[in-house]
Image 1 (cartoon, rainbow, N blue to C red):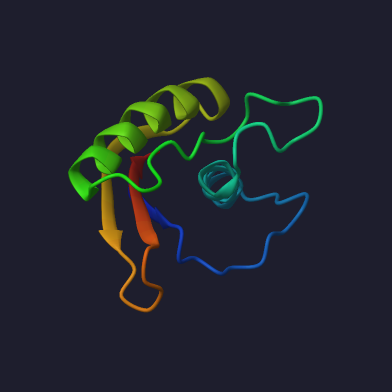
Image 2: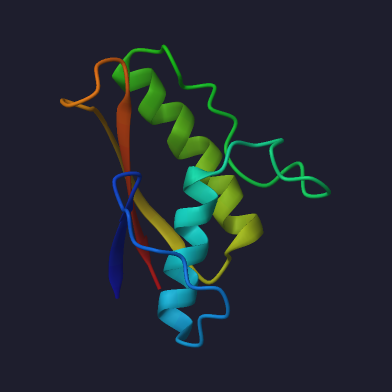
Length: 103
C-alpha cells in the first residue's frame, strides 16, 4: 500500500506506537524532519539539508538521493516511490517536501 509523508504534517508523535503501519510512517516523518548531525550518539540519522538555497529541480534530486539511502538504512520496511519538492507559498524561501512510500 502507498502512503504520503510531508514536511507539512503536524500530527503529534506517539511514542510506543503499537500499530506497525503508523509506527513506520511516524518513523519516516521523524527521519524527514531531522537534520543530520542533530541527534547525539546517532549523528548520521536525518537529512543533511544540502538542498537549501538550491533551485527546485536540484533540491528534488538531492533530497531523493539522500532519502533513498536514509530510508534503506533506517526504515527498510518502506520503499521510496517518489519525492516532490515545492516552494512553500506561505513561507517565502522555504520548500515543502512530500515523500511517497510503499509498505
